[in-house]
Every structure is written in structure tokens, then in C-alpha cells.
Length: 126
Image (cartoon, rainbow, N blue to C red; front, side, top):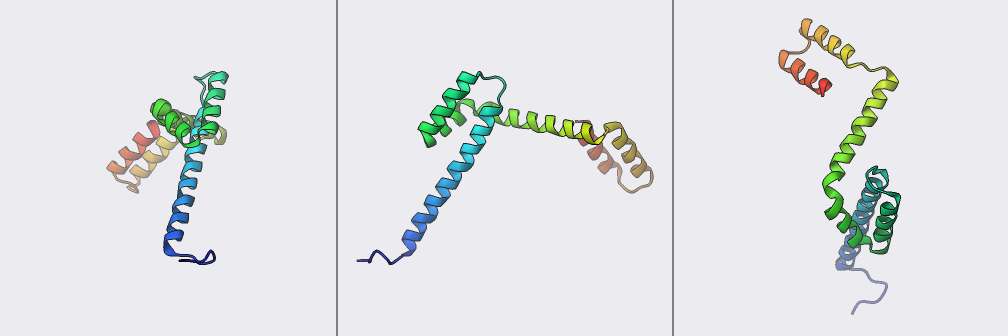
């Protein structure tokens, strides 16, 4: 039998799994809370109830939120990223028209190929 001071590989694996489970839960909790509190389509009372569920039932609450509200999480995240990108472009004076002119100049100088030009231009327009 092992004395309390001894450590085995099995104990290490169990501890590593516990740490991994905690880090996974923390990451999911932060992602869920971030989505929950940035939502504009939910009332404050609804957010409050979800927050209580997330804190009272840590794993079950997160999985319930992801299963019931997860359809729009990616859409809301990409919309917020697009809004932040547009605000940053406005702040630094980025103009899509200016960038297209630069791309035209690079294509005319044969610095980029027509395929690269079309790819970069499509990325700017969307």
C-alpha cells in the first residue's frame, strides 16, 4: 500500500484530468458568459436567470445554455467581430476604395497575379 507522501503515475493522470476539466469548464463559462451579457435580444431578467443557472449548476448550466442558445452564438460572435472591425477601419481612416486602388496599382505593376488580385478584392468587398 502507498503511503500518503508517495505519488504514482495514476495520481498524476487523475490530477491532470481534473486540471483539464477545470480549465475546459472555465473556458466554456467565460465564452458562455461573454455571449450572454453581450446579447441585445434578451431582457435583463432573462440574463439574470441564465447567470443564476450558470452559477448554481456549473457544468449542466453551461451545457444547457450551449444546447438551447448555441445556434446564434457563432452568428452573434461574427457580427460583433465585423462591427469591431468596421469601427476600427473608421477610426484609422481605412477606406475600401483606397485599398482597391492599391490593389489595382499592384496588379498593374505585376506584383500580384490576377488570381491574387481577385481573392484580395473579394476579401475587401465582403
